[in-house]
Amino acid sequence: YEQEIAGQIRGSLEDILEGSCEVLEVRVQVEMEDSDQGLHVAWVQVWLSGAENIQMRERVEHELAGAYEITGEKVELFFENMG
Image (cartoon, rainbow, N blue to C red; front, side, top):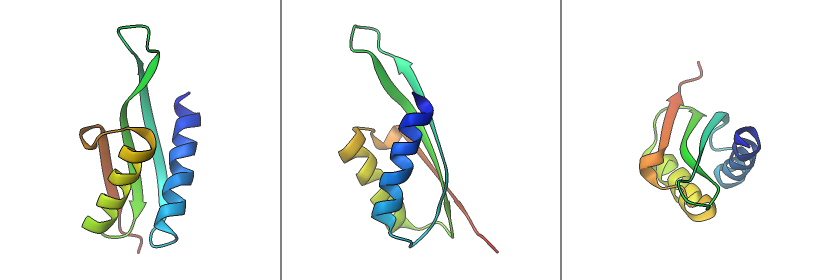
């Protein structure tokens, strides 16, 4: 499940970032809900190319919150300068 969700998130982020930076890696941790609600995303880590950028951070967090209902405190973003 984690790999499937990570792949979906990667595809979504590549679409919204439109080549402005590269999605290098996405890692997802899922956990079982205490009740019968099934699995939920515990955290997401995303590695992006380039220098840290507030606009990119906001776009990624907005996409994850809107499309996947993953709130900001569950998201870690890492920026890697390629050069």
